[in-house]
Image (cartoon, rainbow, N blue to C red):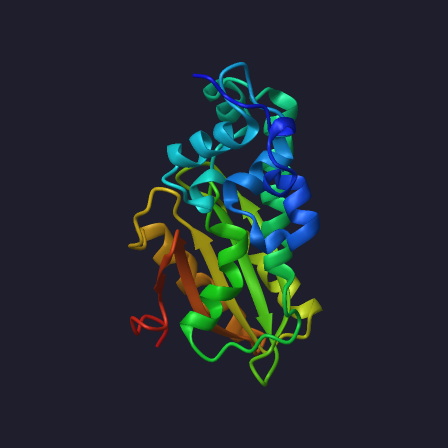
Length: 230
């Protein structure tokens, strides 16, 4: 494949110059990614390589975030370990920025509100994590804590850590959330058992389990919506 190096493009078409002149929002995802990787390979410019990487995940940034450093560096010519680390770091930074937006003023009035709080941290993970959000009497989020991290199919939960975080925050309510990287949204027997144990234990210290969400990509399952917290 013949390609024209980016340095020989018209200045207004070069991703860095375009960003400086028109702002980051004017760039495509491939152009933004090309700034991160800086250079392509002998056959592709940085933009062309970025386009190929994005096509491999159907142009879905959530799916891109699931690729490991090893998968990026071994799967694409021109992406070494340093560039793969830069991509992973940028995606993680974006996830953390989204996760901290609006805190601690977010109100949780329904399962969709809860989903929007946890989505940035959990949507594109390839392993399971369990988080809790602590809420005030007015249903405002006063804190979020990761309780545990596991493998691709499960994670453990220590009830004591959940209650400790809630009590230290003087929380009125808590919301559990964990992800299913497999895409299966239905709760397992272990998920049901955890929900019952947390609800029972929290009630002993005057704390309400408001919901338990299972999240996968752009969808979720809510114990509250399904009437399983009565």
